[in-house]
Image (cartoon, rainbow over all chains, first blue to last red; front, side, top):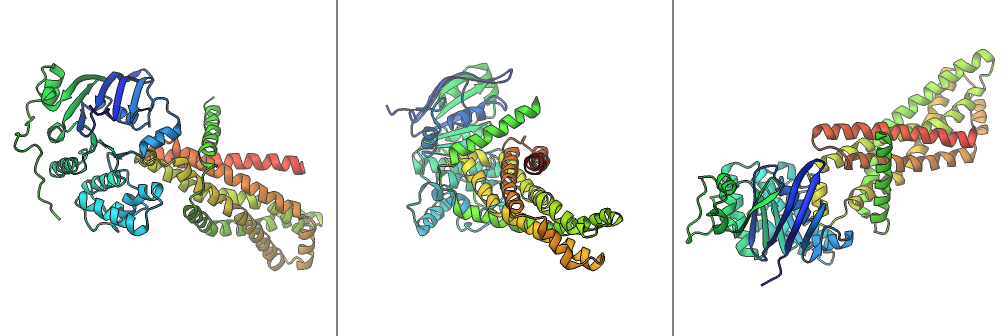
Length: 263
Length: 245
């Protein structure tokens, strides 16, 4: 079996008197999509920040590509980060740069060997993948919420990372745009064949693209397994969180169909 | 206690910046962009304030010395107060008010919108990317802005002294020149460099440690200009005490 790109071992984190993560342990399988779900304020985003090294645990190990982010020197942390991409909640785009320049940004920083034309080709390719062709010159403040997410996603995949993390990809979006983002994640999953980690509390859409699910509740891991194992789990908190509205896709249609684009 | 912790944090921020950025080549384009922006942004307000500080120095000097029969001392007074103390301080205050507040608010907004986290995740050191160009940019323009402030203060006080107060221009210039040494100009330039360091580090630090949300951005901006000015004035006093005290 391939080594897990992310391995969490007994991760503890406290902020003052508040315990945010309480002994979380699981491995994120390579080449698959793992959804980390749970109610708001239960430690999902904090867990994600541990994986990218923005927060260090009080106790335990966060191994990413074999590097323990808990105590790795800055250089090693940056080396790990060059192998991953992340979509932030509202895209975290730089307003002073155009849409294309935002996507190009990591290439400019880490791939000086690429010519301007090669960078432009890569950006156009990424824009195509997120279904926003021709938006290179658009100022980022003129983008809608859904477009900002797509541009953030294009920036996350532009360096062809091995691991892509999504922090609440559906937050703040209307249901139709949210479905479109889910469909896009499903499409990228089939196209890129890399490891995806999706943090969400939007259950229905994201679970449909997940291969594995981890559920956090009050800082503890209450469920972990394949999508079927978790969605059929008897754990009362899992049942209550997933609710009665969860509709699993049929085997013939493993991912939701993309909604038609409205230009 | 809180102030001490804040100053400790500021010092640590400076050490962190030096550790992560001194060995790296600065982003050249962005540095020149910052230098241009800081210089051009601060220039109109600097020219205006320096001009009127010069006029008022001449007026107050005239009022103070005329009853004592020392009209000729106006040139000396303006040169000593303007060149040694006020012009560098005016330049620092204006740069803190224009460029410092912009640095603090920009970085605080980036903190709020997770853009600094995004830089980190993209393996770009935010100290290098955000602080270095601003620091080198302000260091490039601050001495020039100080010289401009000195020049405008002297010119405006000369104009008021000669054309409004009727002083002899040759006497004014002779006394002004006689009381200004190269060392005063050089000291002003050294002060300007230290002021640049203070303004940049304080403003960037305020942005980096700001609380999230609009209130946090406002607080960071306010704190940047207040702390920068206090530290600049304090440093200015210490230098004057050592050199002229």
